[in-house]
Length: 135
Image 1 (cartoon, one colour):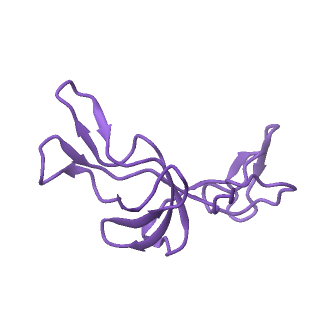
Image 2: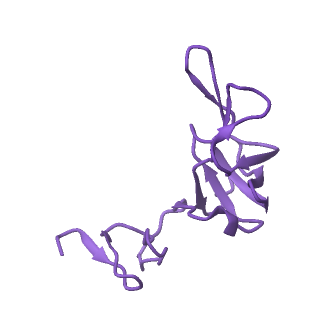
């Protein structure tokens, strides 16, 4: 194995030496110190449970296409608390000062909206994160 690499003891995947979680099986590597906001991409959003924290990545999800072709994304990036999960998405509430209120994170297949021709429903890119630190 090359320098700066390590092998996951659970699945055998080779990863970088500073990796906190295995990307294949999510094994938590033993570390002396972990950052407070370790984020792991959510592979199956249907397995999220009420009370878990997720981060919605900016420039992902449902968007509107302007006449000049520019995309305007309809969701705010930030940390949310999962309230419930249904067949097409996740009901969430804002968990930090950047996002507030109750929101719906669409996770279904990309498709045109029934309301407008220029509105495209697309799945969001989300990460599972630790609870944000209180200030």
